[in-house]
Length: 353
Ligand SMILES: [Zn+2]
Image 1 (cartoon, rainbow, N blue to C red):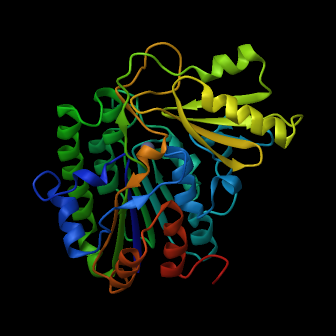
Image 2 (cartoon, protein in one colour):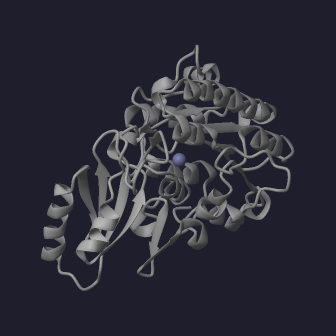
């Protein structure tokens, strides 16, 4: 059996229909797609959800709380630390199964532990000279497709990732004409990836997801909680993450003091809500249309809040096991943590096997 996990970064479940996204709609029709899609972890951002896709572990265990890692009591880049915990790539290696990863955000390879795959692209996590890049410097969909076409996809586990929908929504907003054009283009790109799977289709289970969606960030002023916390001398460290932010309590403060601080944070102008995710980790989000930062927003669309947790979730493929997995995601709405255990079951890898 071959399991293929395909991520369309930030792609909204809500736009899937046969006119705009014929290829996604076809896989949904042939396979299974829950009516409300899937559900991301909070924060609704890229790296923490991708680390969780490949480990099946929540942020408390991977250390990836958003697009930032908190490991050994300090913030760092998720692609410097990689996820804490075992990944599907480790399990494939131990079971002598062949794994392949071809991704449009090169920093994802390290974030997901995918540098351990037998073949990964971009090579060593760095786009080769001459790779066409999007406005944010990530390989364009066309580069991913070309790399996938040049890769031997006769593997046990394949990871694909397309990044362009995320970049276009950041630049223009999720409801813009430009974003709508991007949805069509990325659906076309997705169709080309599916075509590459046709030779072994009867042996394939194809899981198609997105990591989160986006919301408009058209309010002219960012919510500058971070500078406020610094100026007020609050004993916390904060990292902005679009329409979400990560607040970590310093070791000195008590649970009661942190609880008091959370109330102050909720009173700060532009903050929409928060949730205590661990005794020392408070995840917060903005009011609609706003994002965290300083001054004017740099994006027209962003993500991070509970308003962006809806994911694409489609199970298809020619292998009979696709039918069982499809039925199970229709019975119970899947989320970020659903996929790794299912992939391990399908490939008979990991601790349980
Ligand atoms: Zn993303």
